[in-house]
Structure formats: structure tokens, C-alpha cells
Amino acid sequence: MRKPMIGNHAVSWGATLSRVQVIAAYPITPQTQVVELLSEICAEKKLDAKFIKVESEHSAMAACIGASAAGARSFTATSAQGLALMHEMLHWASGARTPVVMANINRAMSPPWTIWTDQNDSLSQRDTGWMQVYCQNNQEVLDSVIQAYKVSEKLLLPTMVILDAFVLSHTMEVVDVPDQDKVDKYLPPFKPEYKLDPEDPHAFGGLTGPDGYFELRYEMQEAMEQAKSLWEKTGKEFGEMFGREYGLVETYKADDADFLIISSATIASTARVAVDRLREGGMKIGILRIRVFRPFPVERVREIVSSVKKAMVIDRNISFGASGIFYQEVKAAMYNVSNRPPIFGIVTGLGGRDVGVKDIIQMVEDVDRMDSPRSDIIFKGVRI
Amino acid sequence: MEKKQPDKKVIFKSVKEMPPMPVSLYDVSYNKTGTWRNVRPVINYGKCTYCMICWKFCPEAAITLEPVVIKGKEKPKPVINYDYCKGCGICWTECPVDAIETQEEGK
Image 1 (cartoon, rainbow over the protein chains, first blue to last red):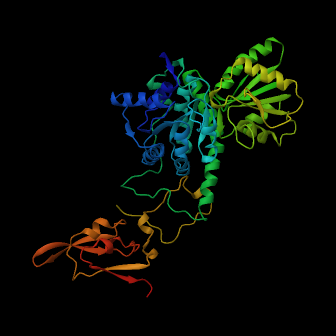
Image 2 (image 1 turned 120 degrees about the vertical axis):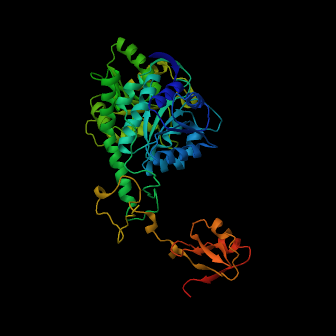
Image 3 (image 1 turned 30 degrees about the horizontal axis):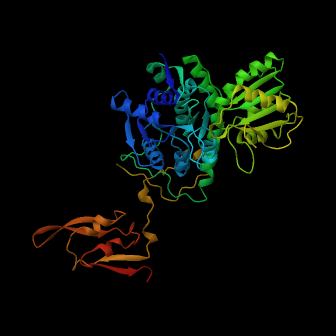
């Protein structure tokens, strides 16, 4: 069934079709409609889930962890300061290996108080052991929630499905809502090997000394490595069942490209229009969109970036005192590759400042004139 | 239900033997925490009124109630389980008749 919906409702339908059993959330702009619709769906008994109203995002994640440990498929959604308040519990979810899935609507961090998009909220949680998926349209948002449960529950790692505030969260697009029967076939019920059960008591996350902790962290990293092929495999299966295939990365006209734009989320989809226009002028240009940021698709990035003459990373985020974060990751991935091209790092669009087709064309033209990057940040769109 | 417990401390030789998550493989009653105690509470049953306040307040559920018959009436006698009592002091603080005395451990 195809219907127009905002990105936030695409999240709600993704969770509903995944038959989540526990939802715990605290409202925050621009996430609000995600849980608003889910609460209505629960109240109308269209979804057999326990909806828990909590007093903070920290509690929301704590409730999801408890529910997941008890064997329930659990879900939450948040943004910015809410995600930051969850920070301690994010480590808990991944360390306890509870496959919680949450949606994070990318909102810039305050102060100054703001509600518009950039990626600093989710990228600040980079090292918490959560997988991160950056979506480029509302269809991908819905599909990624379902796929996230499939990957998370297999590997016992939590996933954050990420979408841009307003650009996706409050913008209507036509979304194909898959049939429940087909989703049920794709995503079987959650049946963990170990769970909280009074009949078979276990302690979870108990005191672990230096003789055990290291191995548990090694296991997390191993699961992250396995996640790379699993995102690809389950993305192909998704394509076979629903006609839309997903991978760790997505390329656009990159096969014969000399110049590669590397970006994520909606900037990468806007860049397609820029690439089409630049190709009309004879430029051999393509796009590498990084969809899954954790685990970082190092092998795919190396394979694609090593075949171009120049690469330009567009970051809607900044690591203060360093540079754009995707830029750092791409550079790090390429360092030990002998035939790496010069890689330029753009920081733009912070706090939701619009990044349009013309802006991206301007970035490409500016970088095209340079032989090598003179600094780690090229600011675009800031009034200096 | 039969509780499985190891006869000695389990040390995994490799991650392959380990569960993927930090979960205890055995019943946690195996982890006796009474050794943490510095001060031992001792109930003076001559003073105890069987009010059950110590049992209600014990945060570790280390006080159990055993029925005893006193002057023809059944009363709930509080008994401290020293395998798990950490000596936190809540019971002797809350006891309304000062029937819980304290002894320093190791003396």
C-alpha cells in the first residue's frame, strides 16, 4: 500500500510492522510524531505492545533495555539533548547485548536552543557500541527499522536508525508500506538464548573483573565485523522480498567517476541532482553515500575511493578541534591504501542551514580547482 | 527446580566458550556476599517483639521469617542469613526496641 507520510510516521509504521512489544519514549521535537502515532496505534489495539510513558530519555532507554533483556522486542525514539541524556544507557544497551532499535531524528545540539538538523547528536554517540544507519528518504526510514531488528537480534547489538530533522521527519513523501504477512516472513519473532526469566534465573551485567571484561568487548567488536556482511545480506533479502535493496553504502554514477562526492543522509540524495547537472557539463562525477556508519564499511570505502582521482567528503557535523567526522573516518580508512586520491573535507549545513543543489555544485567547482587540501576543513555556507 | 552451580570458579579459556553477553551462567546464590561484612548484626531474641520491621527493611532480603510458637501463639521469628548479610546497619537502625546488637567481624 502506497501512501504519503512524513518521515516520523515512516518510523512509526516501521516499528508497527516489526511488531515491537515494548515502546518507551519521552517526547522531544522533532521526534514527537513518532511516538504520538505509535501511542494511537497501541490505543487502538492495532499493535499488541506495552507503551510506557517515562519521565526522561534515560528512563526510556532503561525501560527498553529491561524489556529486551526479558525477551521483548523494544523500541524508542529521540533527538539531540534527549539522545545525550540517554548516553549512559546507550553503553548499557550495547554492553548488555540487548538488541534495542531506536530512531534518532538528527537535531543540532543546544545551546543555543535549536531544533533544526545536523549530525552532531548521533555522531557524539559514535563509540557507544550502537550500529548507526543514516537514511536518505522516508521509504528507507521505514525499511531500515525493519532491517535493523533483523540485524540487531541476530548479533545482539542495538541499532540507531537516523533521519534528518524536518528535511525528512516533517516532510511528506510517498512510502510503500509493506504487507504485514511479508514483514513477518522477513522478520521472525525475537527469541534470545538468554533472557530474564524467574524460572531460570541469571544475573545480567554483573561485576566482571579484568579476567572477563576484555573478552566481552572483543566479542562486541567481532559482532560489529560480522554486521558488515549481515547488513549487505539482509539488505539483498529485503530487495528480493520487497523490491528495494539496501547495502552498507550506495553509489550513484560512481563506476566511471574521476571525482567522488562522499556524504550521508539527505545531503547525499540532494547531491544526485548536482551530479546529473555536472555530468551534463562533461564532468565524470559520482557519489558514495555512506548508509551504515557503524560498523564503518572500511572495505567498501577503500574499494570505491581508490578508483577515483579526487574525493570530497561533505559533513553536516563537526568534531571541534579536528574536522568533519565522516571526513576523518574516510581518511583513516584510506591511509594504508597506496593509490589513494587527495581527499577534501567540507563542513556545511550546521544547525539545519539549507544545503541545496547549487551549494553542492559550488563545492565541487571549488574543490576541482585545488590539487590538494590546504586544511582539514573547508567551510561552506558560513558567513565569515 | 534444581539449581546448577559450579564446584569452583569458572574461567573461560577462550571467547568461543563464553556467552555473547555478560550473563551469569549459574544461579547467583553462588556469589556469597556475606564476606563483605565488617559489622555483624545479632538479634537478641529476649528483646525481639517479632514486629517484622527488620525483615521489611533489609535491602538484601537476608532476613527470613521462621514461624515459632511462643506462649501458644505462632510468631514470625527473624533469622539473619550471614551468607548474604553485608552488615549495612539498616536493621539495627530501624529496630524499634534495639533488639539487634552489633559485633565487629574478625574479633
